[in-house]
Every structure is written in structure tokens, then in C-alpha cells.
Image 1 (cartoon, rainbow, N blue to C red):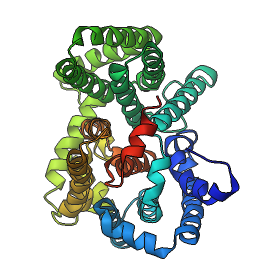
Image 2: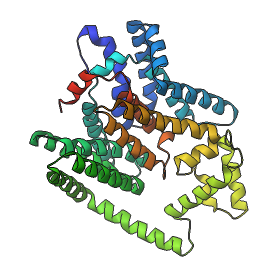
Image 3: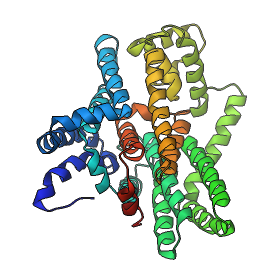
Image 4: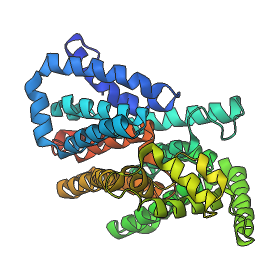
Amino acid sequence: MFNLSSKNLLDNLILLPLLWSFTGMFLYPDGRKLMVILVLLSAFSSVYSYGIKQVIENIKANKLIWILGLYSMFAILAKTYYGYSSSLMRGLICLFIYLAIFPSSLLNKVNFKYLILLGTLTSCVYVLYQTLVLNLDRMWTINPIPYATFSASLSIIAFYYLLQSKTIKHCLLWLSTFIAAVTPLLYSQSRGLWLALAAIMLVVIIKSLISYKKSVYLLLPFILASVSAYYLSHDKITERIDRTKIEIEEIMQGNLDTSIGLRLQMWKAAIILSKESVLIGLGDQHSDYKQQLVEQKIISQPVVKFTHYHNQFLNELVKYGIIGLSLLLFSIFLPFYYLKKNNNQYTWPGILIISVYIIASLTDVPFQHAQTLTFYFVVMYLLSSPANNQQNEILSNKY
């Protein structure tokens, strides 16, 4: 992806934030803050090298940039008047600037499979260091739940390319990549993402069985990948399953102050509070309204301390109303529309990542974390852009 010759230095600087979205953002907590500096450096390089006309053409041509522009303006207004996450607002503005200044011609220098390999290496090294060296269990320096969304996205793409492999070399490459990508997901102990990955893998298997005549052979890499991943993390899986059984038993006995029980209470509270300010939401005042629900004995006190509702769609509706929810839905459906319309080698990888985010949004808020938000929009721009052409397909087929 990078060319070290002097004449391509500016292009390399422009590509830095894209590379950082797959690597540095997921290496340490402040990686998201350095993204601001990289985007500014990239913006100056792009305007100097390609001119302001390129920026105007980008904004006109790509409606995903429109969504980010509207999202950024809404975030600024919400932050000013009734509350919005500073890191999220900063992430949206950075994304708007970066995708607006990104020259479409540089898409030909980006190898998506290469980025997946780098992202997998990054996540695997980070999580193994956090758990095996620092012995932090799930108390990583980066929240393990959004990290699980990143890992699940890498895992399903690796699995997709594994089933598409036509040679033993490629099969071994993507089998190893899948195992390395799914290990952080299993160590995160995020049950919702485990189920999401399993469900989407089943869809990929069915698609592959339908698409290829020698479909029975596709079951072999699936079995190898599943057995290998389970062998590496079976203790974490068993522990989480046992804990889930205990929580379900406690809920059946009326104790809703378990991990699952608290989520049920949050969803109940969200449905009630979403009616308080339908258009623009409650912003930071949602905590005060939750306290009122405690006083009315509708939910328990532990629910109040949570800053979100463990459901992206309900969270948007409560905090930012119909406007916020609409922006979120456009962010999901617009890339999906372009992926289907383009119908190229990136269509299925893009749809699979969207599927991971949708399912993750049912029990978490992946669009509320700067790392996963940045990763999502960068990948969607990369995969759904109409500027993708045959040269990109040639680069992609290198792996």
C-alpha cells in the first residue's frame, strides 16, 4: 500500500490515517487521539498535492461524506446545548475531514486484504499481551466489548476469504488469519459477538455451498478453523457459558442485577425514556430521568451508573431522538445500498461487516466508541466507493 519513493511521500501521508484505523487505533487507548494529528497532516498533504477542487468533487460524489457532515453538525449542536460525547464528536469530525480530502485515485493503492492481515496481527498481539503478559483478564486498556466488534469483523472477513481460497497456500494463510482474529474475540468474553460471528459464519457457509459445485470440501476449513479456535480458548468459552447459565437462573428467581438482568432493565428504561423527547432526545439529562425511574421502582439503582443502554438503536433514540436514530440508520443502509449497487469483489465483505455491526448494536453501542466508529466508516468508504475499479481487484487477488 505504501511507496517509499520521494515522489509518493504525500500520498503515503494521506494514507496514514487509513492504516492507523486498522492498527494504532487498537493498540493503545490514546490511539484515537493521535488520529486527529494524522488526519490534519493528511488534509494538508492532500490539499497541497491534489488541490481544493478534489475535496469539492469528493463531497459532491459520495453521499457517505454527506452523512458524516450532517452527523458532525448534529454532534456539535448537541454538545453545545444538551450533551454529546467529546471523543465521538471528535471522531465524526475527523472522519468527515479525512474522507472529504481522500483522493479517490488513491483507492487503487489500497489492498483490503493486506489491511485485514495487519489488523489481525495488531489485535492478536494486543490481546495476548493484555491477557498473558499483563494478566488483565478482561480489564484491558481498551474496552473489550467494542474491541470484540473489531475482532469479529476481522474474523468474518478472514473466514470469507478462507472459503474462497483456491490453493493450499491461500487456505493456510486465511485459516491462520481467522484463528488469530477470532482469539481476541474469544478472550473478550463478549457473548453477543460470539453469537453474531457464529450466525454470520453460517450464512457465509450456506452462500459458499450454493456458489461452488465442490461445496463439500468447504466444510473442512470450517471444521479446522472452529476446532482450532475452540482449542485455544476453550476455558474462556466454558467459563462464560457457565456464568450465563447462573445468570439465567438468577433472573428466573427475580434477580435482575446480573449482567443480563441489567441489560433487560436498560432496554426497559430506554423504551420508556424515548417518549420524553422524541425528536432530539434527552442528551446528558437521560441520567436524571433514569433516577426518576428508580424512585418509581421501575428499574434498580445500578442501572443509573451506565452511560448507555447496551443497544445502539435504543441509545440513539433516548439520547438523540429521531434525528440521531435516522443518522445512524442512514450510516448503515447507505453503504449497504452502494455495496449492492456496485456488485463487485467488495460487496460481500462489506455486507458481512455491516451485519456484524448491526448484530453488535443489539447488545452494545459500537457506533459510540471512537475506535469502532472510525473503523466502520473508513471500511465502508473503502469498500462501497463507486471509484473502485478493476485495478483494485487485481491488487486484491494477490492474497
